[in-house]
Image: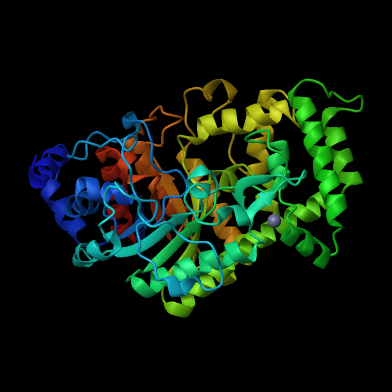
Length: 498
Ligand SMILES: [Zn+2]
C-alpha cells in the first residue's frame, strides 16, 4: 500500500484529520522523542517511518540505536505492531548488524577492545544509516540522537573484540559476561566510541544506558544464581583507595549470597527471622554497603567520561541517560545512592522509564515474587505490595492491588508521581524526560495499550514537571492508535502552553 493511502486510511477515523495533519507537520515546541531500532528504518523505509511518527505522534526527535549489543534482535514476530502499513519482518532468522556506525582505528589508541567488522552475509552491512537518514530528518525539522544500551550478555561477549579482558570477576574469581566499569580499557573503549561517532556524524545528542543493578540488589533480588561481582584487580584497588578492605567486602558478599541462595532453596530459615538475619550480615560486613556505593560511583564515572568525551567534540550536543525500569520504579538501593541533582553536572537530561502497563507483571514477578523468596518472605504479597507503594510514594488507592496485578496496569497517576519525584530529585539542575511506554510485551505476549490511557500518561508527564517525553519502548512495537494518542496529547499541551 502506498504510504499516503495508508496514512489516509488510518487517520480517517479521527475527526478533523486534515487539520491535525497540518499541525503535525510542524514540529511541536516540546521535546517529543521516540526510540527506534535502526533495522525498523531500513525495513519500513526511512521516509515512511519518519512520516508515520510525525503525522501521528508529532515526534520531533528520533533516537536510533547505533549499537545492538544488548540483544535487541530476535523478538517473536507477534511483538511487532501489525499496522504500520508495511508488513513487519521477523528479525529472528536474519543476520543484522551489531554496529550501525563506521569507525576510525586511530580513535582507539587507549584500549585494545574493538567493534566487530560487519561479517559476511550481514543484511544492511553496506548501509550508513546515520548519514543516509540525516537529510530526511532535517527536512522534517527533527533532531537525531544516537541511542546506546550497553551490552552485558552474549551479544556483547561474542562480538566485541578482546571483551574477555574487561569481564567482571565474581566472589570466587570467576569471569562473567558483564564488563567492569572500573576496567580502564572498558571505559576508554566507550569514550573512544562516542568521540569517534560525534566526529563522524551530525548527531544532536546521545542517550546512553546500562540495564544492570548493583551487587547488593543482585544478591537480594537476583535475576539468576550467579555469585556477586565485581572483585577484579581494578575494583579491589578502588576499594582500597576508598578505605574499604576488599577481602572483607568479598567475604560479606559471599556470605550474603550463600544466605539468599539457602533461602531460595528452602534450606535457610533462621531462628531470629529472615529479615533480621539479612540485617545481621550487613552489620557484620558493613563493607557490603560501601562496595555497593563504589559500584554506583564507578557507573556514574563512566557516564561522566562519556559526557565529557562528547562535549569535547560537540559542546551543544545533548547527552543524557536511560534510567531503566528497575532503578526508576523499584530499586530502592539505586534511589538511595544518589539524587538526580548529584548526576546533573554530567547530565543534560535524565530519561527514566515510566511504562505504566508492563510495570504490572514486572512488579508481580520481578519484584514481589522474588523478594518473597528472599529477604521479604515474612510479608504476605499484599503487605509487600503495600510497603512498595508507600516507600515509593505511589498511591495504592489508584494502583492495582495484588488480585488485580494479573490484569490491571498501573495508572497515569504513577507516571505523574514518578515524574514529580524525579523532577524534585533533579532540583532544576537537569531536564527530566519520562519514557512513556506502550505496547511493551510481557515475555513474548503483547500487552496492547489503551489509547486513552496513553494520552493521559503523556499529559501527566508534563503535569509532573517533565521537560519532554521519550515515546518508548520500541517503535516496532507501537500501534498506530497509541502513536496518535501521543500526538493528540502533545498538540493539546503545545496549544495550551503556547
Ligand atoms: Zn571490576
